[in-house]
Amino acid sequence: MPSVTYTAKRKLVNSLNDEVTLDFDAVEVNPRDEKTEFKEHSYGGAEETTLIRIEEFYQVKTLPTESYDEFQEFLFSVAGGEVFEFDPDFKSTDVGYSPIQVTLDTRSPPSRLRNKPTFWEFNFTVRLVDVIT
Image (cartoon, rainbow, N blue to C red; front, side, top):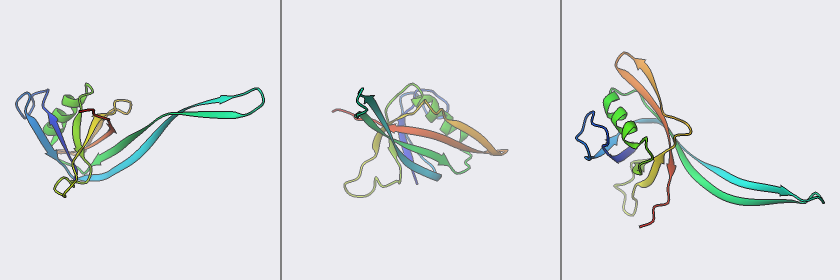
C-alpha cells in the first residue's frame, strides 16, 4: 500500500501546516526513467552524444476511493513544487528503508475520474529529487 507524507498548504481536511500521511490502495505504481541528452553530428558524419541527466519518475493510479477531499488537499498542497515523501510500496516499516523525496510532476497534470457517484480514481506522476542536507 503506497503512501505520501506532505505538509497541508490548503485546508480541506486537516489544519494548515499539519504533516499528513495519506495511505491509499493503488492499481499501479510504475517507475520509469527519462533521459535527457544532446546529440551532435560532425561534418564527417561522426555522432557524439552528451548525457545531460536521467530523471526518475513514478506513475501512480489509485484504486477507486471515497477519499476525494483528502486527495484534493494533497494535490493542492504539493502543486507548487513542494517536496514531499513518497513510499511506493509501503516499505517504510522495513529496517533500512525510508520513503523517497519527490515533487509532483506538473508536465503530466493529475487527473480525477469519477468511477461511481461517491468513488474517485486519481492518476498522478511524481519525480524523484536530490535533496541536499
